[in-house]
Length: 167
Image (cartoon, rainbow, N blue to C red; front, side):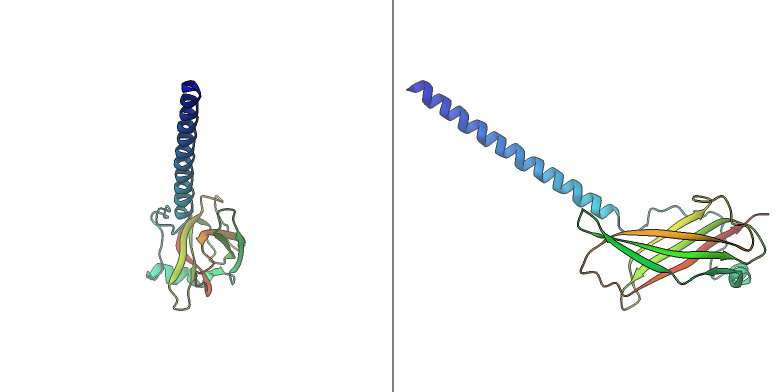
């Protein structure tokens, strides 16, 4: 009888150990997915275009009429993680007469007060394309991730955040 009692105790302690390991693994996996979802937030770690002409400068205002962005469109999709990803898309038209060798675009989804819910700046040229010649167009999609169903998403914005020209 003592052998059966010992086996029952060992079996119970193994079951307890397995349960503890399973709960610990579930907590680690949940933390991993939580961190993954948070990583898709605001693009504060995005690279910027160095030496670019920025909005508000006299030189930017000179070229602004020739840098045309079409009305942006937004597409959204649910991810398996439970959040929503939005892709903002526009077409850039270079009517400046000069070749662009650097282009940074700012994209944002804003709430009803005009405050960004999620935003991101992306260096499109030279990252995605080498340059944009005069009188040519280029489609620019920018993905914003990490939206919740409860987020107030009233409007979208896309604008030029910086530009450089080929000499």
